[in-house]
Length: 110
Length: 122
Image (cartoon, rainbow over all chains, first blue to last red; front, side, top):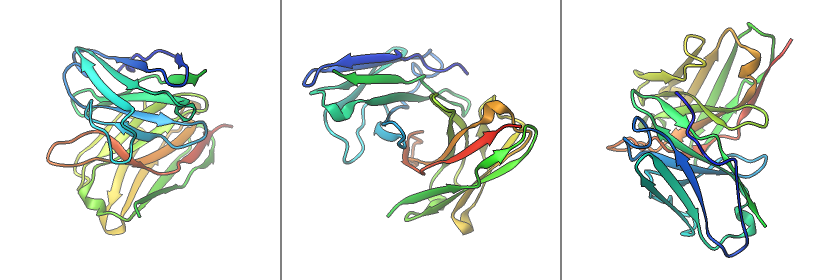
């Protein structure tokens, strides 16, 4: 199972919006609405921020939103804040009870 | 309060074995699928294995299949990962996590333990 493809890095200024893409195939991202996103600050435990493509867990800021088109899922962070600087990972069900992460994206807030 | 705490990590020589444990508290353990995820130093997250609520169904990443065994003891609110024939590339922080489990599986992890470090080196 190949990892989902994410950009290695993205950046944005405070207040701006950024989007992180997560590209898979018709066998994973494209075939199931089971994409989730995780935020991981350095040295910290990953935190769930989006599940089932668009749903936000209780307590997660509404500045985080998810979407999907075809084989690509996306995470958008609006009103960028310094505390958003972290690594972000997508994760998807890939059929036959297998799961796959994206390679991760480092977000830098300029 | 919902908690997961891993234990059992350490230094092991190549070819050796290790058993990780994950103690759960604050929720009805046997209502949830559980999962092990690892992160090699400086690298991304990697799915290792996950198990159904009763332990009757388990699945593995290709990189560990045949070497690792996931299990659970619902009476003890505990999840385990038996790791055999360890390789240098198994060196990582190992996290246990809870999968959001409902009528439909979400395959999303909403609660994570702090992780336990496994180092495979001679």
